[in-house]
Image 1 (cartoon, rainbow, N blue to C red):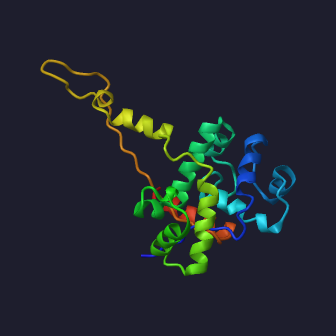
Image 2 (cartoon, helix red, strand yellow):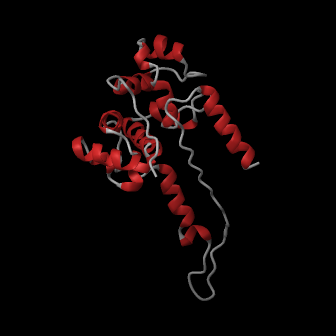
Image 3 (cartoon, one colour):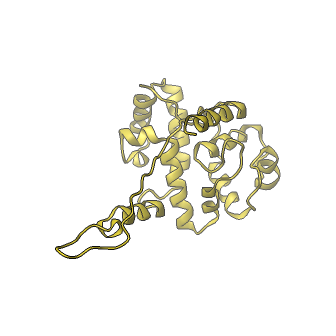
Length: 205
């Protein structure tokens, strides 16, 4: 079933956006004024960068920076890993279809986008070009710290399994983790996003 994938009509300032975020203060709200006055991207064509950051998981439905936003201000390696994870989140269906989607460019990437999103040639190119613009800033080979911690939690040593007769490991824990992925429309309004998140919150209360 075709899915919606984020795209920008103008993606030339994607790298500048993340370069500026790395040096600027963390805002209370990442709004148009902050984008223009602090980040320095004043064109109206740059405004879609705000919902794009939302797609990547760096700001929430109210445009408030999420905990992952602070990773964009860390070391170069940390920032690249955070961007890669944001790309995996925003373009999950692409990575479901091809785990190394980030390695593709040109016709191969456009074909993959068309296959996953069911888009025409023009829209597939917009999505593919946006994907390349942000994916080149990420490090997809690094293992995120969250995944490393997960591996430790799921190892026999962490879970306190019996490793031999008469030997027991203390600290047995039973934990359940649920990951919920919500695909947001890239052209939605703030009211649309708030309604979606309110519906999710009510469902799991």
